[in-house]
Image (cartoon, rainbow, N blue to C red; front, side, top):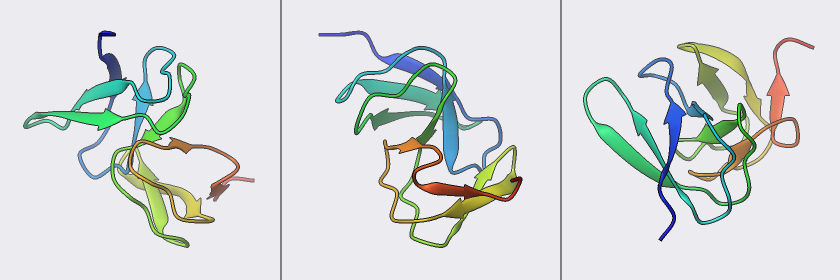
Length: 93
């Protein structure tokens, strides 16, 4: 069994965590929310430094990182899915 990968949740209200190493589809990713340790299963490959959804995000919902909205979901984003330009419309463009 592969070891679980690590991610950083910057703020407890965030919808995404930043993975600290490359993650393959089906691998577990652990992150701490300030109170307890969580596990999310990657729905696809996620490169080091990119964002993984730590909860499901509905279309058009604001997506938080750093405790503030960084963009809006362009479509449904599943827990464990990569959050990137194909499913997130950035507020900074």
